[in-house]
Each structure stands twice: as structure tokens, then as C-alpha cells.
View 1 (tube, one colour):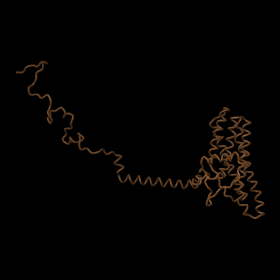
View 2 (view 1 turned 180 degrees about the horizontal axis):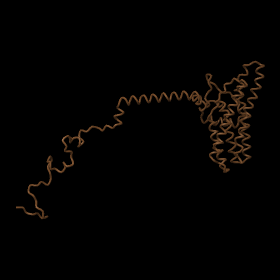
View 3 (view 1 turned 90 degrees about the vertical axis):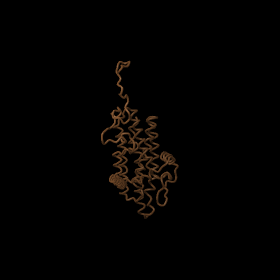
View 4 (view 1 turned 120 degrees about the vertical axis):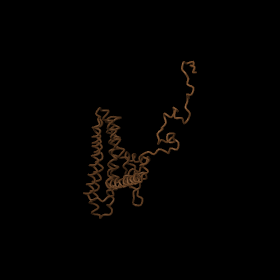
Length: 300
């Protein structure tokens, strides 16, 4: 006879409250894969190997490895061809020589540009028919000071225009491009003059760019003095820098342009020496003209 329990429900005598393991009536088997082809080890994670991603399988492919090797060789070959063609138009190896400077050289060269009157020896030193690096010889031309002088001059020009409420990116771009164009015109004019006078010299185009770019130091000093002390400070400092760059250019270019005069005959040497001296004077006199032309409108 069945007796009701305290909750009011009848209890069946043979009903299990919890299934035994392996029993199909076990509720846990409702969440397992009971298909015929299922493997319980795979679902439990036992004996499962590492995951293989598609990218890993692609990298292990010999064809992809060959393609990567071919791509890297093609890239290196293209870089080599680009460096060779670039060096044909822009001598990168030669430019490294003109930037071989240090702090001591820069300080001494700036002092020489501003005060060249007490310097005696202006000859460039050589080692096995090759000029030594600028950091070992103060007379060697470099491009570091002209480049830094040009950039500083443009920055100070923008500052001067800003104090006069005339600054704009277009005007600053025109200022920079005009200074660069005048530098190119000056170098081309010197090259043409050397060709017409038939001067055989070891001066290169980069040397002329370096010597022509030294005037940006004086231009920067003049504009900065104008900002600090007015027009009178501008004219006094620019006058000093103009005279200094004139003396520096004459003493430097004279040795370069007149280097082969001693090897010629007396009559030829006398006639050509005058032309070469006039050319040296013209190159030196052009520096103050450009310095004033590119800076006078910046100080008011």
C-alpha cells in the first residue's frame, strides 16, 4: 500500500533519483555526442593535437617558401639598382665626405666665417691625393654649415615676418624657394665663367655649392641682429658679415682658381691670371650682393 509523504506527493518505490554512470537515462548524456561516429576522447580533449592554423600551413608549404625567397632577392636587386642609378645623378658617396664634421670643426669654421682676418694657412690638406675629411681640416669645404645656415635663415625670416604681421606659409615658401633659386643661378654662372675662361681646377659643383652657401650664416646673423637691435643693428652686423665673407671667398677661391698658373708659360700665365683674378673678385663680390638682396625686406 502506498502512503503519501509529507509534501503530498506519492513516492514510487523503484524510481532512481540520480542516474548511474553509463546508464542511458543519465541526464548528463543529454549534452554528450551520442552519435555512432562520435569519439568521446575528442570531446574531452584527451589526445588532441595542437591546432594548425591556415597561415602556418601556408608557411610550411615549399612553394610559399620559394616565393618568399624570390621576393626578397628581387627586392634586394631592386634596391641595388636604385642605389646605382641614384649615385649616377646624386653622388651619395661624395656627399658623405662633405658631412663628415664634428662640433669642434663647426665652431672653428663659424669663427672663421665671421672673423677670417687672422687666419694664415688656407690650403686644403691632402692624404694620398685625397683631401682629408672636414673634421680634420678647417679649410675643407663642407655642406653641413650651408644647409644648417639655410634652414636657420628661413626660420629667422619667418620670425621676422611674424613680428611685422606679414607671415603666411606662402610668403615663407616664396622666401625659401627664391633663396634656393638664386643659389642655383649663382653656381651655374660660376661654372659657365670657369668654362669660358678655360680654368682647369679641382673645384667641383658641390664645392661651389658649399662656398656659395656659407653666406647664409651672415644672412642669419644680420636678420637676427635686426630683430634684436633694429635697422641699425641689421646694417652694422650685415656689413661686418659681408666684408668677412668677401675676404673668406677671395682667400679660398684664389687658391682653387690660380692653382695651375705656375705650370703655364710666362705670357700665358700673365694674361690668364688677370682673368682668373677678375673672376675670383666677381665671385667674392656677388656674396654681399645676394646677402643684402635676400634680407633687406625682412627688417623694418
